[in-house]
Amino acid sequence: MSESEKPRRRPRIVLVAGARPNFMKIAPLLHEIERRGALDAFLVHTGQHYDAAMSDGFFRDLGIREPDANLEVGSASHAVQTAQVMMRIEPILIEQRPDAVLVVGDVNSTLAATVAAVKLGIPVAHVEAGLRSFDRSMPEEINRLLTDAVSTWLFVSEPSGERNLRAEGADPARIHFAGNVMIDTLLAQLERARALDTVERLGLTPGGYAVLTLHRPSNVDDPVRLGALFDVLEEIHARVPVVFPVHPRTAEAIGTQLGGRDLALRTTAPLGYLEFLRLLADARLVLTDSGGIQEETTVLGVPCLTLRQNTERPVTVEQGTNRIVGGDPHVIRSEAAKILDGEPRAGRVPDRWDGRAAARIVDVLERDLQEAR
Ligand code: UD1
Image: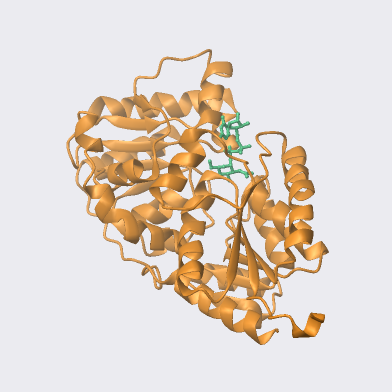
């Protein structure tokens, strides 16, 4: 049979996930692509996150099937981790010859897969494009800028994404306001999460506790800043129990930077997706330096104080329940007190955070990839 007589295969798309916050973004996209069946999906796990609590548990909770390839890159410096993903994904891309590569978010795996793909002439779709903190000391900001600069499809989750991309000169025809895939997952899983007894098991009462997460290098790698943050967080804990699932980077910093300080907080190991969602949904207050949690609390209507100087997700402040409080203990103390004293915090759910973002994205990809044949 000559090449032209062979039945043409479906357009193939390689989906890349590497670190914890990627998994809830990849899940609805993979499910939507496989449910429709028009595209052939090949799933790559880079292995940037590898602990059971940071990876396998999420695959299970979110019903993500076994990856077709696991690059097992593990932890390393930025350059080494990024280079390892590039080196290990390149032969897979050459062998699979996909019509597109889909990346999500802003982690090192996102950037590495993008660079490897575009240099092989494979177009890249970036989901969660255009977010900008305008803080180039954040590794994620560098990953976002570079990934967007060379991606063919730019799927944005909020209006600021489109504004930022246009200001950088991106071709408007490449920008698609798809909505938020992470919220697709939240809405799909909320009922299952609410059925768990996580809150009761931890001896807490709904509406009677705070949740803390902390893992940004800018907070945890500086012992003075980290110590000062814990001082004020312990004060808050004296008023309302503060539950703190500790990220591995932070656990290490508490050991090395703070001499193994014994925190007066309710610490736990990292939690699975569903257990953590249950905790968030019933919290009185959330304190975090995560990106995604700012979005999740906005949809849940739970007050959120972001322990950073800026956010790349301004819609959570403009429309949602988020407030940027930085690292100043006075500000953190007084903003937490306002919430605990019952100050109302009205918010609304941003446009297109409606559970249909993955469907909008797959509509565009199916159309463009089928047309390109
Ligand atoms: C990465 C992302 C960050 C994201 C975060 C979510 C980059 C630049 N950063 O940061 O944007 O918000 O994931 O978690 O991509 N470790 C383990 N087990 C694991 C993974 C990591 O113990 O499964 C430890 C290792 O000591 C490692 C450290 O955590 O050195 C940091 O991991 P790394 O993937 O480099 O960055 P994160 O801080 O997790």
